[in-house]
Length: 99
Image (cartoon, rainbow, N blue to C red; front, side, top):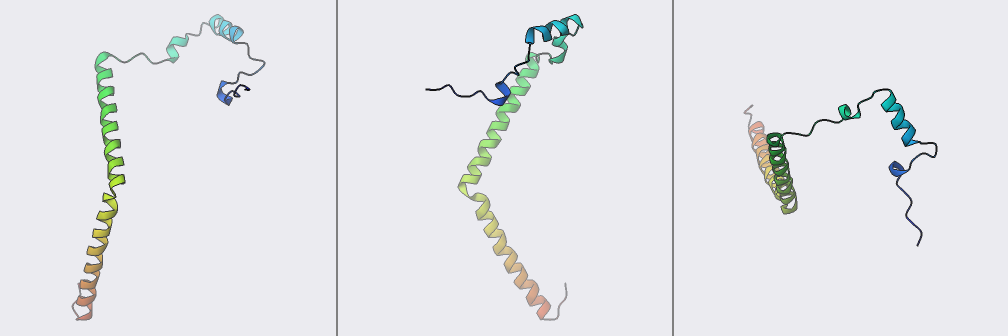
């Protein structure tokens, strides 16, 4: 079986020379560590983790609502109420009473 082709982002250009690129950066006194944000503190990690759990909880609730057709049922109820209100308005307009 032939190997799978590499994804475009994994393909390295043929003229790439990583070692010479890194040497040039070192010679230019480029500090690559400054390009990466520092790791979060333990307190920040706890906050981020809690926010992640909250997001997952809300996403699961939204999926459950979608699967239950609850939104569609509420829409149908509202359409019924709207139709009845339109009938009332037509009745009032027909009897000469203006809103």
